[in-house]
Amino acid sequence: MTSTDSSPVPSYPDQLSLAGKGFVVVGAGQGIGRQTTHALAQAGARVFCIDAVEDLAKEIAEEVGGIPHVIDATKRDEVEESVAEAQRQLGHVDGLVDIIGMARYEPFLETSDETWDWTFDIVLRHAFFFGQAAGRVMADAGAGSIVYIASVSGITSAPLHSPYGAAKAGLMSLVRSMAVELGPEGVRVNAVAPGVVWTPRISQFLGEEGRTMQSENSPLRRVAEPKDIAAAALFLSSDLAGYITGHTIVVDGGVGSKFPYPMGL
Image 1 (cartoon, rainbow, N blue to C red):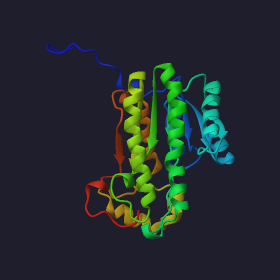
Image 2: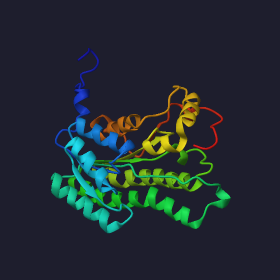
Image 3: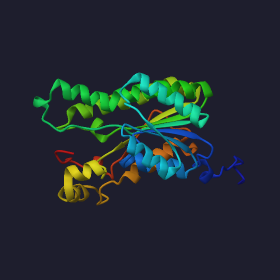
Image 4: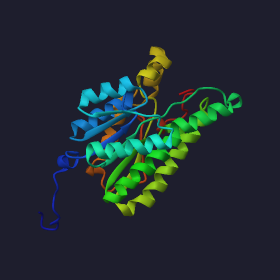
């Protein structure tokens, strides 16, 4: 202590530890989901690995010593069953990280009802279902952390993928509302909003020319890797973020601080 400050000093590295905790990761099989699953496991968590593709769920579970589980996350009954099964397998559910989200790229005036409905299903519906199912379990326990992966497309404009931007904006609003309602129960709710992330899907879509363009546009002169987003999700899931709730952390390499933002992604 100093002459004016006698407050205890915690072990800050220890606050990053998730030892003994059980986490559910939705969309665990590749990209941001795979890296996040590794991050949580390396911090000590046991992970319940959910993916829509059985092989991917099994592969990531084998990598981290986790538990694979396959569902359609847009179906309420399957979501609720998966959280119940996670609680049975893990003994307790202390955290949830929901990665799922995808965009279709087409002009606004040509966007169909089917694309709109599909986008809101793949971006927002599962977040609602998992937020309720996992939120109840954590509220009953008096503690927990929920982290969603949002997007800068929900913060700025989303040209050529406007339904995705609208759904991600809705997700960030949901995060704020959940945080206010679940906070008194000891449950924190936050989100990470990436810019362009060089996932397997995006790398195939953009190619090396796209990678060069995105890297040159970033103040950090590189495109984000899935590990960059996983690191933010790990932070928000840990006690280092114990007084953070209702917020979305932007992880975009500073691109959002620039003007103009390039058309497209």
